[in-house]
Image (cartoon, rainbow, N blue to C red):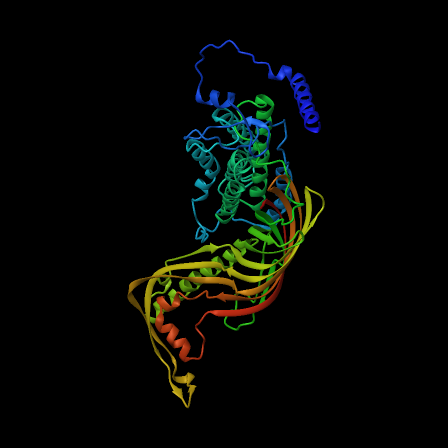
Length: 577
């Protein structure tokens, strides 16, 4: 009896479900007609069930006919990806323009024997500015599917560069800012940096958001390095680079927003990796690249006391302008709140009014030549060789007009989530700091001289009554010497750092971060001043004579210790994994 009941129940249930689904189960045979379709149209028309989302989407058959899980069909809305991070970068560039007020450049070239040729002289930045588009096109040509098809990619890219060019050139030739090297009045903002950040943002949108965050890190890392090289090459101020970066990012975001408005969901191939945001996860590990401006200890006072200097720098003070800071930083979090990581940083601090140092060198050269000409009349009367040709040319080259600090640090990182999209961060770091020196070189050419002299020493004391110069003769050969006229360098030292950051996650794995870092280190700085090294070549007998009389013919070397407290304000592009 029970078996019959269950059989009857099953029959009724089956008939009821069939009746309920009658319309869905109806067999409809459509009229068929042959149509020629491209591969892209076939892929677009082929529905499938996404293995990753369980939703109906588009799928591309592999070369062996297997179905590969992909993201659902992308659908971008107008201004959906706008971060506006370029706006504070541009404003930061305006604020940093104050660095120029204390930088007195010899634009009129009134001292022709002075040149600025920094140690860092490279044309690499002329090529790295195109890394983003080269990478994007290379991936596209290689068949790696990105956000857009060829039509939409080319239109978005063309609008990005067009908007950027309009902004940059409109500001350049209106503001008319002089470049640091005094070559032209089109310094602010930096076109190289803007171009580089346009390419980086295109790569980020096409492949970073849809394929892997590391495409974005590569693009923004190379763009940041391009901006730093523009400063090191003495072609741009820090303010030019910051504003250029801001314009590059804003221009690309505006162009992609316009593409979303024009095309809507047409000509799109891939959506974002996922809509889930990154900051409120169990392990908020991260890696970022950033650029900022440095403040803090910016003066070195060398209170030099030395009898040999006479008209030399009895007190030499070096003031440094706003520093450029670029860094890479990352940490692995063991929990939501605590992690272990490290930071690599390059900080460059240009000298304010470096031409003051060169004027000092110029004066040394002019006074030396003038004194030699004055001695010519006396030398002629004595029947000696004239001295005016002992120095024929004397010029100075600034090999490095800034102190560059390289530092590496490790320590603890702390994270406090403020919801899904915001988080506060801090850290405690210890590391090592190494500095590249400030360097002014001298180059002197002339004709050597020989000196005939007598030095009589009795009981270890020079008998001045029997000591003197008997004559000066032409050495019959020319000399050419290069040496370090002035050098300031810092030692390697231990550094301690902390900081506070605010991170905003606008996409899964992708964040923008603003931060304020503080670092402290105690450094020993050494000043080496050697204005008369050429005498060792021009008149070696004079050096020997002076040393016999007890005079020190070596360079002046003076060391001071200073506690360096440095602040950095900056913005970072960050990926979380």
